[in-house]
Image 1 (cartoon, rainbow, N blue to C red):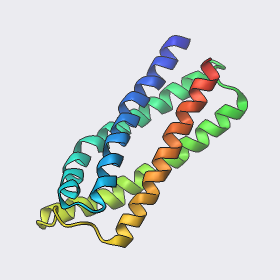
Image 2 (cartoon, rainbow, N blue to C red):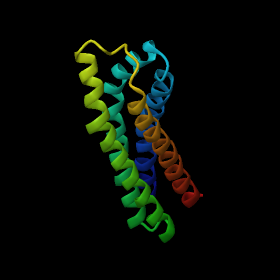
Image 3 (cartoon, rainbow, N blue to C red):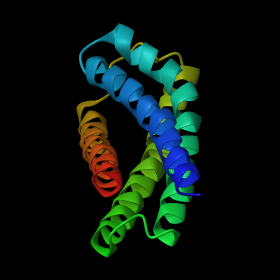
Length: 145
């Protein structure tokens, strides 16, 4: 059971964190490039569901690891806090950023660089993603070694 819990958690990281890394890199380059802006809009259609699938697997895996006492009490609190932050951030990206990107694409504005205030919100979200995914992975690794 321990191996299965760890496998599900790590599979979630591979899928979710991998997709986050891809879209975050696209978004970083899109700040100043029309090409990367369009590529980001197109790519996010694929990465968005992968991020949610990965997050769900991480939630299931961490819950199983918690139930199997594979995580210290402090790590459980930290992990669930980070998951909450990741889910809130994911909701912002899914329900605020994504519809705006799709609207821009539909209106033929996919190659236009995003307005600076919107870019700032996305960059903040980028840092939240970066810190939360890597921190959560570190917590898992530190508890299984």
